Image (cartoon, rainbow, N blue to C red):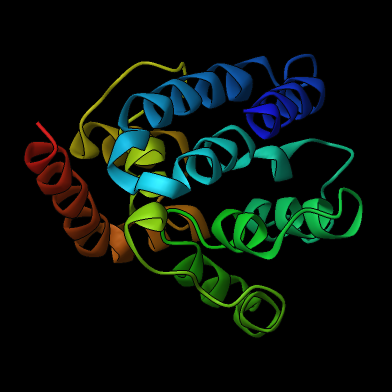
Amino acid sequence: MEHVQWARDLAERLLAEPLPRRWAHTQGVGRKAESIAHIVGDDADLLICAAWLHDIGYAPNLVSTGFHPLDGARYLRDDQQSGTPLCRLIANHSGANVEARHRGLAADLRAGFPPIDGLVADALTYADMTTSPDGFPVTLDERIKEIHSRYPSHSVVTISIAESANDLERTIQIVLSALNKSH
């Protein structure tokens, strides 16, 4: 639990003042991860920490490549000496591999943070992609529509999220199935 408090405090320090809306989203993702963490068993704290830290790469003082999953993971690895599983989750959340390819950063992402698979990675994506920018629960379709409304149609984010939509839907269904089995 001390790791969770550290993650929450670090995210707040990096996001709350410069990016209050991103901080609101992060709080919603953190709460959602806490509510579903039981489905990942011994990885519950890892999931919750990743949820709190998944968007720290947006913090103005951490931006290096402009790709928040990679920037956040590098900061956690290099400045915070965080463990490999946490950094890999941050680097690869919510279809990051697709966006990294479109940004020309796929090799950097794979070399520094190989993809991590399994229910904990799926649960992080579920928590992120079912939480609005203001921290409220939404469906995946609502989240994707919101992303499309926020970015121009030709932006790498819009193109990448559209390409990732089917994989994101499968991920959501995996987590929903696990949640149904846990009751």
